Length: 337
Image (cartoon, rainbow, N blue to C red):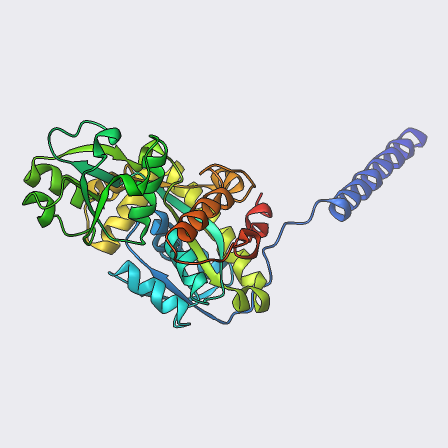
């Protein structure tokens, strides 16, 4: 009887200890991390078919934007320039901008702030006629490009790297999409991007003597909000950045499924979708932490912006020295885990 009582007592003590341990563990267990408390208000987002924006369609398809508490209305823009203009005019809340154009809009008074570096282009190129073998051979030659554009900025950086200046070449005003002057021999070289670079090579018997993969970060594509939006709805901006991170990681880990989603939405083949990512590098969290750090080179948005500003001052586009800390906000990237 005493033996049975002792066994019962021991059992009860063990049960009490187990229950107490469970309760203590539950009480002190790390709480599940929750996302930012979003406002639920409408966020109008401009969207283009472009690698750095693939994640938007994927996150929408997967339901991750709604999951994050975001109420997003997409507007698809076939014209990238129009999406930037609409953003500057306040017709949409979020849009991607080429860094050079972003700074031009800033100079025109648009109070815009970059929060994500989406991608960097390897698709921009200088195509030259036979006999022009390298950049130094461009001296004294006639080059077609759009003036006061990122194409002219790219050319200036490339020339500078080869101990030349813009004054050492003759600039002819030509739209980047117009390859006819090059094909017909009106210019000796042209500055453009794919697929027009390949078209100039094929139809104009040209060769690519430089492409932007040789200077990674020279041409960046960034997601931009208006400052007023960030000030009034920082939680929504953070949720947007969080979903971007989740979606870009998904693309890296599941490229076949990701490219299939994009192909279906934009009526492309998965091969076409993937091929574009070889011309445009999709950036991730690690890339962005470098992008928002302070450095003098193209790996930093601040460093690139300074070079763009210097170019704009030389070209007479502005006399103003811009402070990049006023229009790049890296805190949302820094908060990512």
